[in-house]
Length: 166
Image 1 (tube, rainbow, N blue to C red):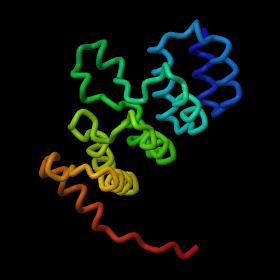
Image 2 (image 1 turned 180 degrees about the vertical axis):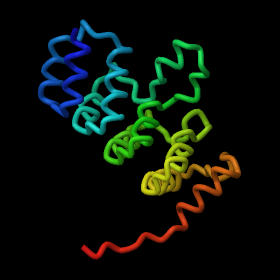
Image 3 (image 1 turned 120 degrees about the vertical axis):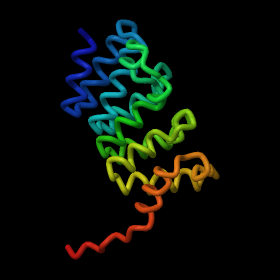
Image 4 (image 1 turned 60 degrees about the vertical axis):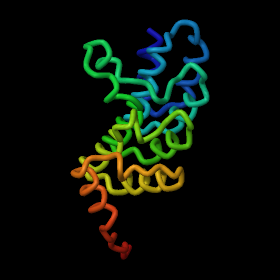
């Protein structure tokens, strides 16, 4: 019951309703449900709700995809799943919030899956954001990624952006 109300608030981007219902039902919602709601908020780009949930100690911003765990698919490929959802959906504001949290890393479990998704979906701004994150945190990712991924990333990084004439 509470899950559906909270989920609806995310889809409406209604942070006030979300926080009110969450406060009323803290004991009535499991950690897994809370993490699933966090994943939905990241996917939908509900930045205020993501920010609110990041301050909740029960939320794991690096949580796995629960269906992958349930169906015994290799869950390690879904580490930092909220970040992966934000990447695939181009939610740059959410990605910045997640990268500011020390529990989240675009390196994933060493497989750099979020970076791979950003390159695969041609999210050049996100690839550049990850590159800056790695540089700022002195993470030498170039040696850890596949040759194909490095070619994609370097191609995106070398592209010049055209100035806007608006």
